[in-house]
Amino acid sequence: MKEYEYKVSAAGRINVIGEHIDYCGGKVMPAALSLKNTVYIRPNGTNKINISWTTLPDKVTLDIDKLDSYRNLKYGNYQAGAALMWQRAGHKIIGCDMLHDCTVPFGSGLSSSAAIEVSTIAALATIAGETLDKVDIALKAQQAEREYTGVNCGIMDQYASACGKKDSVMLLDCNTLECEYLPLRLGDYSLVITNCNKPHSLIESKYNERREETERALKLLQQHIDIKCLAELSNADYKKYATVLTGVLSKRIEHIVSECERVRMAMQALKAGNIEILGGLLNKSHASLRDNCEVTGREPDALVQAAQAQSCCIGSRLIGGGFGGCTISLVKTKYIDEFKEFTFNSYLKATGFKAEFYDSEISDGIVITKL
Image (tube, rainbow, N blue to C red; front, side, top):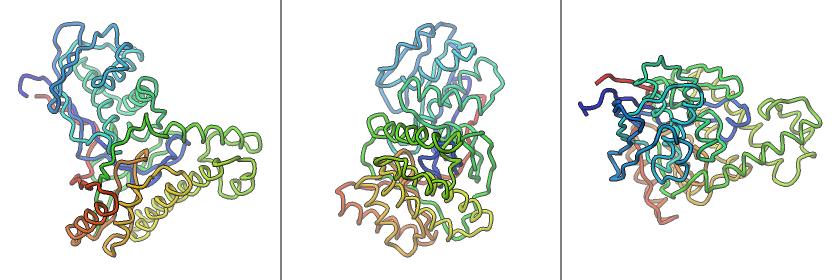
């Protein structure tokens, strides 16, 4: 890769706990992974962005003056959207050649899209000689996901991808963007990431429907109580005003209120070094995602059930937007091989799909290397 000038990477992410509450102004607990999207980049002296991939034969050329016209590309739309939002924010886009190398599995719920968007903006800013503001990059990447690719996401994925720190989880307030870094000390346990390998797409799934349901519930509740976002709703006020919520809205809000409380308890557990309590909270989070938020599905439920059936596993849950993707499990480190074998066989028998396990460390977010 010596012919390129810079190597710029941004991370995929897991979310330890705090699912489907980032777009409700809640606190979440993500961490950046060593699975990354890496952009090798060099200026080319033209008005074009030439994109190629290490894993695809495709090559795409974007006209810098027409970045709004690439929404329907099979490959390159995330890069076009990220570049457009950066351009609209007043930043100069320089013609360049980009080689993308992504180790974040697509459709896994580990935020490959955020890693692509964040690394693209960081790479464009780097060759333009700009000082990087990681939070601003995250916000523009979120804007690209929402306005260009049509996923009405919260800020968590892009923030974690940009601002993650090695061996730390982030306690991120999605309402204020205040962030506290907590050391991830798991003692005798390890986090195991498992992909159910059921293909999914947040755009094609009911993710946006869940977002719309929460917005509807907020408007109903605001007729009775002064709150700016659903994360401000206490459990007592939820019980008091639950009758104003129609249909499934009460279940959705029950998830948000209880998940916000689980994040608070998880923070206390991590600070106290009580990993067993954290494991129990993961189990309760999945149950709420399944029963109240209804974003899991047959395959993720079977995967979590296989994990939770083992005494070496103290907690397991679906992460990400849902309807497929990955789980995380807290597993006694010395039993990881046995855990993987049992989980693989049980899940295969239950669903016919082969689970996949990822070895990944908690890593930094944006990393820039001059080549």
